[in-house]
Structures are given as structure tokens and as C-alpha cells.
Image 1 (cartoon, rainbow over the protein chains, first blue to last red):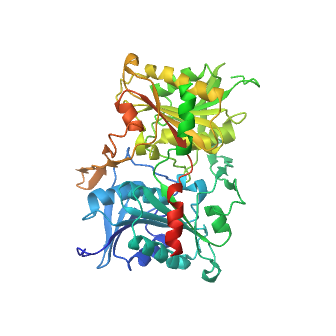
Image 2: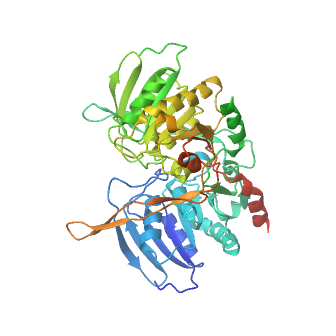
Image 3: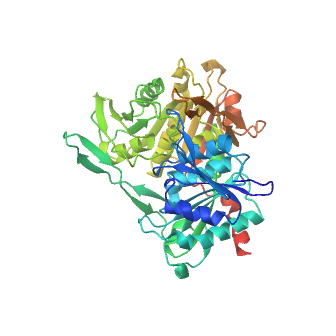
Length: 260
Length: 260
């Protein structure tokens, strides 16, 4: 890959691993915009959130390179991957970090657990324009092709005008035939939580172990400005995400409580 | 442990493991307020963020029980620990989730990587009043005793009036002798990021590997309303943290950009 001075350099990662079809679709969609470098793991890293690898060494391997792109496999989390690429592998700071296309939605509070969105947040912390894409379909046969149109639309907006500092985008695409998707909605994160149901089993030695399962509960199914509403009603949801977790609306009240 | 109807039930966890001195101090400080159940890992789980264990089974063991408290060891992340306790181990929903005292500060964007704060956020997602405590001292000889006074003060405020839904607290305590701590400041999360410096090494087989190191950069060292400023100036910082990552201030502008 030859990076010219005017080329846009795009770092791509995901949490479903280097062989995931969503990563391939995202990479193909990005080649229109610049030179792409992919970095991901061999196996999937779902639910890793913003986790860092601090107890085991990180390893990385260049597995493919051609005129347009370069692919690295590494053994870290999505956040590790972004850090490694930015600090050790890329010839310069990337212009964009794009992550996904995740196999399954990352709407509402799922953003807090998502490795895909963590990679976008990590890019954002470096001051890079960053977007995470997810398709609301967990099935093996998920069709990522409908995502292209919306990926293109979102990235064209960013190409025209960068995002503000400290803000990245969380884009979720409904699992529908292209002609049934009604367009893009700018949304806020829906209020909700996961109702966990652990599966309790016995191993062959008679010892108990648990598998985490669970179901999402939307606390405001009727609000029509949330990402969950958009997805349920055939729209692509775009949520601007901040790296500032301060509850600004509660600062003054909390100051008063501690002044008592 | 006998849980009476009027007892406050307090779930305690951390990301430094069950034998960490900070967990012991926090547990002792909490016994004044109710019956405590501790759950943590044998080894430390630093930098795990809100990660979930989805590929390996979770196991948990009751390792100690007396009149006042119960201790479980598990093999999951801090977030797994809260989920397991709430869903499988506790006789009822806990009144509080408290996490820490972390060995090292979790101010500014470190909240995004912190397992300690992830546990508090997880409690908050269940609608439980939750607080993460950290001491700004990474050394083995860290003195957690000065934390007691401030833990007591914060929890008394919550006992008097619960936190609003979707908000938990991130409390960082400076590593200073008790008489040098100037009091509590209610703060916002400082803008900053980690400047990573990987250590690149060769293993005995001649293959390259990396260790993540790094230094925090405060982007606004002069702002006197941030958690970083409070810690650097001898105050305990208390940041109200929201589980809503939407950049609300940018919603309208983004809507206009996509309407063009």
C-alpha cells in the first residue's frame, strides 16, 4: 500500500474478528474514500467494551497487503487494536477510525458493552473522526449489503465537515430489505437495560457454572426520538456519542447537596 | 449472614481482586450502613471496562460467611460479578452497589477503561444507587485509611436522599495524609487522553510483542472544576456519571447536517 500525501488514511476494526463479513463490507465501502488499514483479531471479541490488555503481551501480524489496503491480525481487544495501530503500525495518524459492521445492534445501553463502539470511542479520544456501524441482525446469514448506502451517506457528511472534538457516531442499521429502510434518523440513546437470565448448568464433575444470556428491556418504547424506536420503525439510527460521562444536568444539584 | 427486612443490603466489588486492601477498607466502612456481600475475582481485573464474559463459563464460590457479611470469589469481570450477584446470589435486589477502593485514580477518561467504575455503572443500570471509589495511589504501600471519612460522607448523602435514575458517582481520593486533604469537590470529568507508549520487546524465539504503557494528558490543566484539578489540588473529586452517552448538545446541529 502506497500512501500518498493527499490520501485519506482510514483505520478499520471490529469486534467480530478479521474474517467477519461485516468487516469486509465496511472495508469495501471505505476504499472509495481512501487507503484502508484493517486490524482485528482472529476470533471474535464481542462484549469487550473498552477493555485493555495489560496482563498478557500484545502480538500483531501483517497478514495481507495490496495496492489499496493492508490487514493486520492481532490478539488484543478492539481498543488495543486502535491503540496499537495509531502508535506502532500506521505511518501517520489516521483521518478516520471506522468500526464494524457489527453482527447485531449496538443501540441503547449496549453501547457500554460494545467492543465495536469502544474502538470508535478510542479513535475519538485521539481526536480522530470515528464511527461505529452495526447491523441489527445476529444471524449467520445476515445481509450486510444494504449497509453500504448508509455508510456512504454518513461518511460523506463527515468528509464534508468533521465531527466536533470528543464526539463520535453510533450508527445502527435495521435488518430489512433495502427498499423497506425508510432513511436516517438522528437519535438519542434509548433508556433501557438488560434483564439477565443466566443459564445455570452442571459440568461433568458436578460443579455449577453459568452462561450469561439476557434480554433487552426498552424503558421508553413510545418515545420516537430514540435509537431503539428508529430501528423498530425501519430507520437507520445515528446517535452522536460523547466521551464525557459527566451528568452535567445534576452537577448543580449535587453541589447543593454537598454544601448542606 | 442473616438479612433482616429492614437491613440495607450492600453489594461490594472491585477490579483489584478479593485480597486487595482497598476492598477490605471499603467493606469495613460499609458495615456501618448494612449487611455486606462481597464478590470479586482471585486475581486483579484492571482495565476491563464494562467487558462481559461470553465465551467461557462463569464460576462462583462462597469463600467466607459470618454474621455481618458474605464473600464470593468468581472468575468474571467486575460487570459479570455485579450481574451474577444481582441475578443469582443475592436474596433480593441490593440497596447499594459500591466498588473499589481502586488502587489508582479513575479520573477523566480513565472512567471509560475502569472495571471499578464499570461495576458502579452496572449497578446504576439496574436502578441501584451505586458509587465507585478510587485512591490516587498505585503503590503497594498505599494507605487506604484516609478514604474512610470520605466514603462515610458520600454514603451518608445517598442514605439521606437517593441518586436520580441513571446517575452514579465516581469518587477519587487524593493520596495525601488525612490533614492535608482539603475536602470534597463536585466536579466534571476532565478532558484528556492517554498518550500510549508501547514497550516493544523480542521474546526468546525472536518474535516481537508489545506491552501497553502510557501517560495521561490533561487537555485543560487550568480549569478548576474538573476531577483532575481537584485531585491535583488536594481535594476529593465527586463526579456524577450518566449512563447516557448521547452528545445532547450536538443533536440539533447533527439533525440539520443530515437534513441538507
